[in-house]
Image (tube, rainbow, N blue to C red; front, side, top):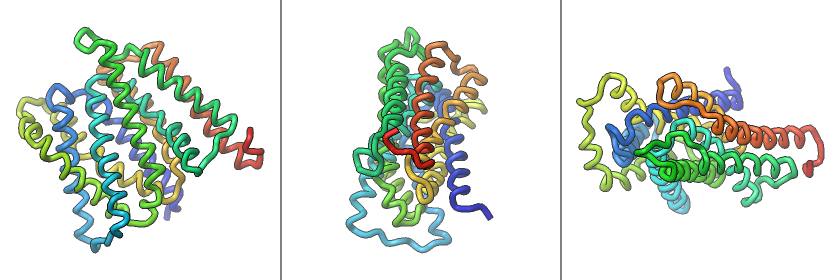
Length: 308
């Protein structure tokens, strides 16, 4: 039987591979066949329905009144704000840039952990943080991936900013809500989060969902649409929250660095994007920054003073 820590690492591996597949698949359908608002609304409704399935074999868990406000905040953050920023961002930027920007999450988790007193800065972590954020900022402002006559560079930059905002929201959730994850069943939290999110979004996006013309899609587009509507929301977030029970947020967030590798391979193979020299350079800076941050934890565990 797998240990809890190994299961947590496998869960993180699987959910980040799923999220990596999102970028090229979203790029196929968003803005062309499905509007961002329709995608957010429909995926949240599907996630809400999936979150009810565990009630077939488990009894409802009571949530304390003081925690309900926190869960409403989590729903507005992860269910609504993150999804809207991600969907509208991906309509403007390229799948490669979007996946690389999303890897800023571990650095943002570190910043929030320091602010909340969970971690503290060291020389190595500060250097890694500056390098990672510099690379991310360069991609947001300078990368030319996705820029066309119909999608000019400033529009691509806006899309990159929205992707970065979604990463900020993810980092906030991973740090701020770790206590709730330890207190309640994961299925209970996700049921509250997705049912509340779907309730919030339905009045705004129901008409957009009804306007989706599935009949105009070929088999590839239909499969891609069904994938991003059904798979990436409930299942990977279930796995992420399970991992937070056994692993600290900083470790959990590190797995996001798998996403650009998988997403880039898919996007290039599908002919949706191509690698550029500037993107590769900026990505190396981001990855180097994260490598330094990870190394700082190894140094500290080996007994070296934390001021290293």
